[in-house]
Length: 278
Image (cartoon, rainbow, N blue to C red):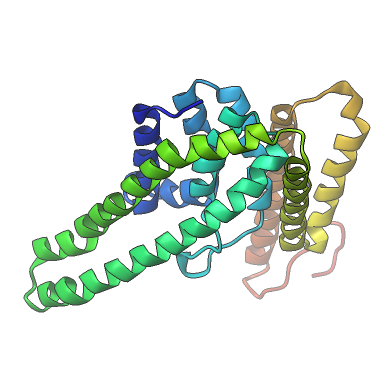
């Protein structure tokens, strides 16, 4: 039960690329805020994609509805998945128990992200202001773009490599040796509770009266069709189709309203096709 140098280094480089927020364009933020893609990368590196995705899907639940004011999150989902998923794969953990491991790891990751902010602030104060005053565009590119990327890699690659190569097997061994015990059961119970909190936060975020119907539809469909063994991929496809129809209908309705308003002389009064009055 071990992690190879290649596996630890590959995942460490992936996390550094995400946390540098520079290599994947606008998708970088999404990759940082969701553990799903990191779980896929871990699964590919370990050659256990199916098990990795089952585990990371459970971890994803606790981050549903979580937002990041100012780019700062109370926990780093990508870092949490990068450690918790390998532990689950090596130790044979259930997804619920992996959640309980992901939470403290993600919290430590947020502290590291804050430390990166601190270093970048020093760089900006020391170099960027000087280059800006001298109108040195190349110098500003180095201080604003290149230096923060280098800082991210210098921070995250060693941290993640040491954590994965040395820490993950130890945690997995401890978990494996206590399999079936009270500690194992506690981890699963706590993990299940955290997932429920994530779902509750999501319901609160999307809790507009006009959207509640979609949530109720999804809940009762999952309940009534449970015996059919329908996969989440199928539900996702059905949900995407329903969302497309909803957007199409509402867009056409707004288009008709705008056209009627224009025909009415731009007075702001809409025309009702079913009535003769304006």
